[in-house]
Length: 129
Image (tube, rainbow, N blue to C red; front, side):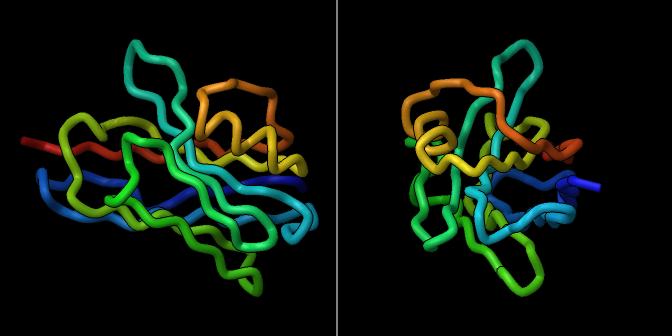
């Protein structure tokens, strides 16, 4: 079964940190670009970071300098280390995967939405003030 499974969300105070994990299965992890996305109530889904098969990473301006994406190809897992969290980071965080690096990158950098190949179910992150 083709799937992405996120974990690591929770409740944290402003200024705190969380690390999210996204485990892939059922597809060739090395051929895909994996991205992290978030959606707050009443807002559209925002692309915040992605990592391609060659290890290139990209970040939206809203998280650059605070969040770090990384991957462990042996574990087919992508991580999102989130530091200096703010209340406005509160959202459901999901990972998505697509074989097209440009498609995922354009969403993260320019907000160009697309139909990605695979989506996870999401994990809630709540940052209290």
